[in-house]
Length: 140
Image (cartoon, rainbow, N blue to C red; front, side, top):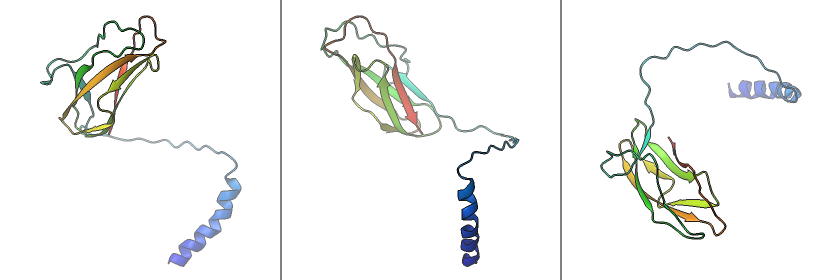
């Protein structure tokens, strides 16, 4: 039986190679019926360890060029039904202003909370007021 399969694959190989240079698109109508509730993923960020105050913003105040500010302590909780293999924290303003998390790429089980300190640092060339976003991206 293995010899027949191998022979069939060898026979089809030249055909596949001959048509590999062209592109052909075939659309196939499809339909699916989904029932029930699928598990969901969710991350929430709090300002307190008890998880009662949802973080809506962080005010780092005023920094001098090249200065590092006090860390903002936040609590990241997995509020979904799926465990996160990793949680990545990044910001949208690097390199003028960088946010350095105390923990990055950490796993988070369902219902688990992780304390994270976010330290802000202004570059030596940063000048002005910066509004930016801190991203918490979870991979499950």
